[in-house]
Image (tube, rainbow over all chains, first blue to last red; front, side):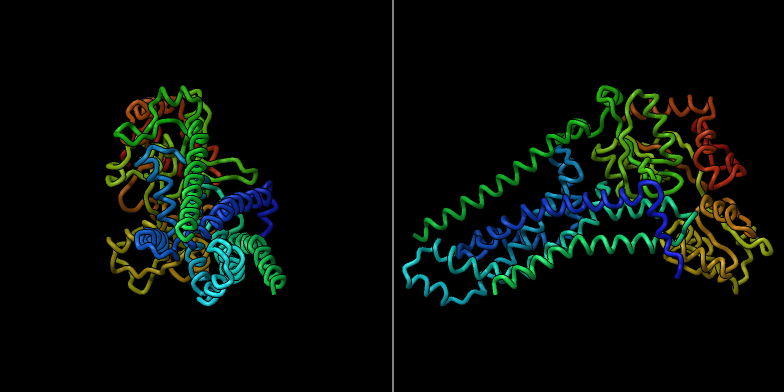
Length: 224
Length: 297
């Protein structure tokens, strides 16, 4: 068994700090997910309207967010908002804003895709049954869309959790940053600690994302 | 009917956007209090003057949190290191608390330009390019490159290089750039990390290892059988505190402070408290800059 240097995690409060870092990452991602999922559904619905102006606006929004690397968005919101508007956002708030903008755009596109994948006859049949537009969405379209959305949005959610590793660039000390701090603080005494510490980080990220996969499986089973 | 549904969707969307906007603003307001009110858009100063910092009771100092032994976080979650020791003293002499901000090499300038920190003490090497973006105070440390080699084959000069030998460097460091520019004939063995470079060097892959002089000094000290044959190579640079461009009140105060600290040999004490374990006392006088005055060597 090679020396993985996991023992550095048991020095002082290192393990606790790593878990606190995980909590910071989870807080940012869960708040962002809770805000961006409903907003994304709304945006997705708006993306399917026939109005050209609305469509164009959301198209530009989606493409802008999708093309911009998240790191650039973080810098724009964190430093740019101070430069341009004089706001002094904290790193956490800036991260949540970026993740909400990003999550909403991606979720919107997923919802749009799910909506247009519902065959036209579903709409026509419900109209023939005398359902109003709202009723059609509420009882016919949305339930079917949600089922199609589950695996896609789980994918997005886990990506959002993992992407929190970028927020260290705007001064938020999350799990990955704590891991780097621990490795560097012990660089001379245990140079191999990187393997052990990152192994633990990997396991922690896994257990952060795994419940969402389980939830998705449960939901899919329930609805079948 | 169709019209109405449309309006509903739109109203909902607007509420959503509004709510988002409100949460964003709300949280930013609550956070501005501790970070200060200096940042502004309309050509006003982004930085906080000396009086504003004193008034607020807290100075924001950007340090590295993962550069042992200059700025790092120990196993109890406390900031430590040469830069941090100095930062604590600055806060003490100003009569304010120090709020340490974890910075990265890539965002140090940005932090100062937006006034999100008042001072950067993050192993910040003075270069002409950086001096256009931020204001550097007097230096408190020297840096240059160094070359370490085995005791039985000490390399003291890079001239007349034997073309069969190579030098180990870590990719992306100043050592790599310097050797490529100044000694293009010397073959380099490049490694991505400190750990791999160390292993290769110990296994005798190359006759020498070039890196920041602090790094090679630390290596020779902790590993039997190695000597730093060239302790300073290339241009000698300095490390200095940096403040936002134009923040003269704070800059002048720091410069006066550094002179005052020089009288009590503060940076030597700092070195002995934080760096001596890693670099030993032999290099104290060549690494430390006291009172802001660099000795010509």
